[in-house]
Image (cartoon, rainbow, N blue to C red; front, side):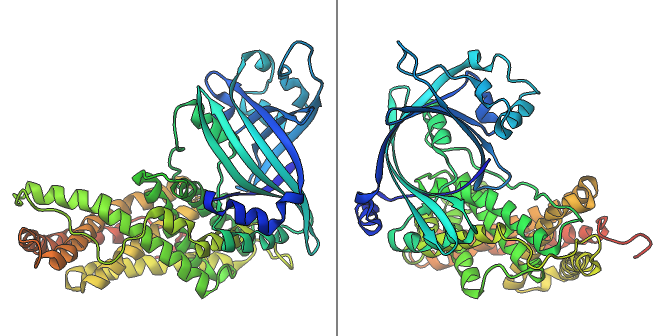
Length: 503
């Protein structure tokens, strides 16, 4: 069976108020002691599975979980296990899951057999949790709400657990989100995609945060309706945004987490803009929330990545040794603040709810819907024309319009990547590869424009900044010419969306 569950992290300072608001003191209490197993090489985790034996008060349950096709969905199979005399923890036996969908999926991932797996696994970590649960209803939706408080333990180390899990038991998924939204807004909860199994595996490996997640390709087919295509693209963007934003919210200061969260947001905003005719996803207020989060994460990029690259170029040009990157104007927003923001988290819930919706009434597939195919071709062709047109006059454009060209080129690349399954990997990759020189040139030009603006602001207080201003002003003219040359080559790119015989 599949489970559909929201996992919400609780800030320590909000725990008491949340428990009071939920009247959790009256909920059913269960003491949980779970032991998680994997091979020494972590084969199960590598394929997205977790396997545990958990004592629920005096009852032992063995559970296998695996990916379920959506970020919130998991394959799950559980079976009660009898205690074994003389053993504190019963022996795990993978054969108990052999005939379940989760067991069959694991067998396929491991090459078709679960034989001997039980003898190859070792305990990786364990957890001790006090769980309080109750059932709630929202219209026709029934959910189980679980408040978990405790810790994970591995290799002599431990990390705290304080989270709220909301699992759909019956009815429309929208009721799940309707219940969660006010809790997020009132108590500062944030979405997490990291299950206890993933957090425990990181602890066992001596790591605090999971690796950053890069963009993937959405699962699209011409047989899907236009709204279904849009839902699949939005879901693919969330597959990148949520894990990275969750790590940032949990305290990661790694630049790559911030960068990939921001890339995911840019891809999402591209989808909403370029495929907006396929369905309504967010209102203007929701889109403004995404823009604000994107901007606030961009402040961090300017201070980290842009400052590092621009200062390195200035040093190569002979900049004074005392030159430093100017402090930002106003109070900077920390990455954690940006992604924990209640409005942003609420929008993420809205987007997740959208990806789980269904066509009502049923819509024709794009294979038969000429308007769908035409719309895709039209958006790709328009962006291509605009980039080529502005590339010819790039050196004459004001800085703001030069920046707009870069944004259009990114949207053109992302939209092309979105539709890869529809037009073929080889054809799309040939086109996207032809955009990279222009994207690199525009990126360098934009970074130096950001640096020029920053050093101009700082020149009155930092004498060394005048060197940077002079050098960057001269570089802007040269790099603009580099951009124009690179953009001219975009006109020669093999356009994968063209009809045969059409120019």
